[in-house]
Each structure stands twice: as C-alpha cells, then as structure tokens.
Length: 630
Figure 1: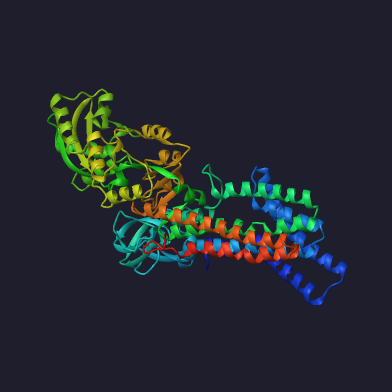
Figure 2: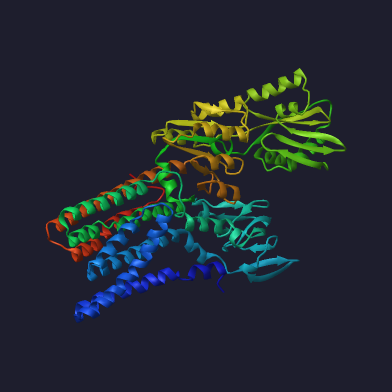
C-alpha cells in the first residue's frame, strides 16, 4: 500500500502533460511538413495551430508578470512569436514554440533532479508500522498513526513519524535530515525523527508529529517551494532581465526604423530570445539549493543563495551558536538558613514551566537528584526576564538578580558580593526569591564550540567586515567568550527586544546582514535580519518558520561552505551570461550578414540553448568534502 504522500508525488502535473503533448505535436508537425511537403493552406493551418498552442502559456505567463509589474523573458518570447505569426513566418513560429516548450520541460526535469536528494527518501519510508497497545503489537498503515500512539521500532527499520523515546536504546542514522555521517545514540527522553534509520537496538517511541507535521515532511515542502516568491534582496537575474528586455525592444525599434525590414527585425528577436537564460539561471539556484539539502541545510529560495554573496555583517547569538548551549550548574548557594532540598524543590517546580535553555539545564540537574518538586500555581514567564509563580499564597521569582530586584527583592551586600564573584568567573547567575526574600542561587556556564574560533576567522577571509556577538548573559561572560573566539564587538545583558533594536541599527541597504541563532529564542531577530540562519533546527518548528537558512545540525562550520556555494553559484550564473552573450553575438553577426533569416535564427537559438544550461548543471556535481568550489 502506498501512502498519500507517495500517491501525490506520483501524480503527473497536468501542465507537464500539456507540454509533452505540445512537444510531440510540434515535432510531428515539422516532420510532416518536411517529409511530405504539404500544400500552402494545409501547411499554414498545421503550423499556425502549433504556434498558437505554444504562444498561449508564454503569453499568459508574461501577462501575469506585467500585472505584477515585472518584466520577464516570456514577454520577449511572446513578442518574437507574435511577430513571426504576423509576418507569416510559420516555420519560425513553430521553431519558437518548440524552443519554449523544450525549455519548460527541461526546467521541470532539472528541478526534479535537484529535489530528488530528499524526495527519493519517500520511497524508503515504511508503509506500515507496529503499534504497541496494552502489551499487544499490531501492524497498521502509517497514515493511521496518531499523536500519542506508541510505535515499536526494530533494528534496521526506518522511523515513520517524529516522536520521543520512552523505552529502549538505539543507534540512529540521521543523515537523511542532517547530512552528518556519524550515527547518533538515542535513549529514553531523546527525540527521533521521521525518515531516519535505526541501525542497531530496539526502541518504543511516542508519536509527537505525524503526516505533514513531521520534520521530514516540512523539509520536503520547503525544498519544493524554495524557488517561489520574491524578496527585497536585489537579484542579478532581475536586473539583467529588466535592462535586457528594454535594450532589445529599443534596439529592434531602431533597426526597423532605419531598415523597414520585418524579416530582419524578426530574425533579431528570434536570435536574442533569451529563453535559455530563463531556465539556466533558476536552474543554477535550484541546483545550489539541492546541493545544500544534501549537506543537511535548507535554503528557502535562490534569493538567499545570491544574498549570501552580499553579506558584510554577521551577527551571532552566543548561547547555542558560538557555545554548545549545554549549560551545567557549577555552583549553588542557599541563603537565610533555608534547607537545600526546599530550595531545589521550589526552583525546579518553577523552571519546569519554561523552555529556555537555562531553565532546562537547571531542571535536568535537579531531576538527577532525589528531589520532589513542589506544587505551585499561577506560573507566568516574562520572556527574557524571568518567571513568577505562587506557593502557599507567597510569590516565587526566578531569574537574574536584576530581575528579582525589579520585583522588590532586597539582596544583602554579602549576597551581592557572591553574585559578583560568580560573574567574574564567567558564569550566569539564576536566583530564587520567596515572599520577597532571597533563598539562594545557582551559577551556570557553557563551553565554546570547538570550531567557533576557526569559523570566525573564515568569515573574515570571505570578506565579512563586521562580526558581532549578542547575548543575554552578563558582561563578564560575554567578554570571556568574545576573547576566546576573537570577536571584538559584543553586546551583553540583552533582552529579545534589545536584539531587535540592535539589528534595526545595523541593517544597511548597501550590504546584507546575516543573523545566526538557535531559531527558537532568536526567532524575532532571525525574521528581521536580511538573512536569518537557524542552527540545529532539527525538530524545531520555530526555526523552520522564522529562518531563511536552516542548519539541521549544530555545525557552525557549515556556514562558510554556504558562502563558498553562493559565490560559486553566482560565478556559474555569470558564466551563463557570458556564454549567452557570445552565442548571441555570433547569431546577430549571421543575421546582419544575411547568412540566416527568421527560420535560421529560430533554429540557431534552439541549438545554442544547450550551452548555458549545460554550464549550470555543474552545480549538481558539488559535495561538501573535497567539492570543486573555486
């Protein structure tokens, strides 16, 4: 049985069918005319039908673009086709139709090739799964799995949905999503994702996302939609099209004004009909996006591939980006004679209501001890500040000392001195107050990623002029990390709103700003930046929604490779333009020398279409390690 996603992918696009029919019809019409030498009226009727059939989709596309105040290559192709029909150049018109439909079919084919790196995984997804219910194992279709169901995964099986391990342990190959070659060990409490493979070990997982909500399905959808939409990033291809169409129309008008030769005018239009670029340039971007997908990176459109070549400022969040994001409690102190167990019970009860990395680190540490969490009420988190709750009618506050002071908590000079000592050690301090009195605190620290320093150096080698680190941690923590990775500019003690304000100040129309964060706490900043890049986004809906570039694993070193990929992609596109210009120059020489007329111009254009297209195909050969990016 095939699942719905497979059935949907196996359906053939009606427009694809129509283009196939038009291609076959165009070839047959030209072949019949050539071999059987049809009479005048029969020839005209047959070729007019072919030409009008080819004109319709191109003219509709050009009209839609004009309504949206955009100029496209389809406009120039429509003009050439209309002139051919008006001038009675039936063979030329048929060649143009053949040329355009071939270009569309080739574009669809190459786009599908780029998507196959992910789409092919659908064939590997199981069609049936084993559900565990009251100790009984039943086999059901994968579409029947619902959130909360318990799914049994044996060694050698692919995981059908996203979920959390509740029993067992397994080694999982996540390369289908992250591109990483090393398998990951998964135990109770760990997340597992659809399309990944259990190499060894058995486990039982609770389904958390099914169907189109799974991480894999969302990635596939992003890849398919990556070429859609526009953005304010200035595009080389957009600039070229606008100027090219204007100059060709103006030049053709001048030629006709002096020559009054419709055949010459038509020959010029047919030679310069840049339908090959209309395919080659998007093809290059599509190939780059497909290549990045193999690396475990999702890029939401060609505009962001091009935008990376214009990045001169990089803004990085500290926690989870430059650092591992795995905070550990280094010290804990209880004030006022309170029992340590009471302090930890209240602290754990409050922080368990938050998804902040600091709160999760504290909770994980407390849960590793035989501590029973207290029962609290009225929990409210002030994002980026702290958490308020109540217990037995008294207020509980958890957060940095400054947050507690704003809530009326008074610290003694001795307590403030302890806080200062911890800060000087580069640690973050999280305090707890109850009933307006300080109860105690924990201090945490994070380790710097092993490759952070090297990546910062590589950014500078690639032309980035300004590198800034932002963090909500205190000045001492920020300074310590900045020095180790050699970032001279950093800003500490920032709230989410402060990060937004800083980005508003750094964004400049002369260059692009890349913001790199974790995609959850930094979602607003990632949206505001010219290009937002989320680290370690596997399983994170917030990262997928808010970011323009999504790194499925926590590997900062991938980003310099993306810079290289974008530069190489734009180099290929510039080569496409040069190849096109050279072939056009030859074609125009032949036209003005009288060697070829409208029919020869259409045939010349059709044959030379292959050159820039073949050049763009080079991008499909790239791979992450040892790749020929120059």
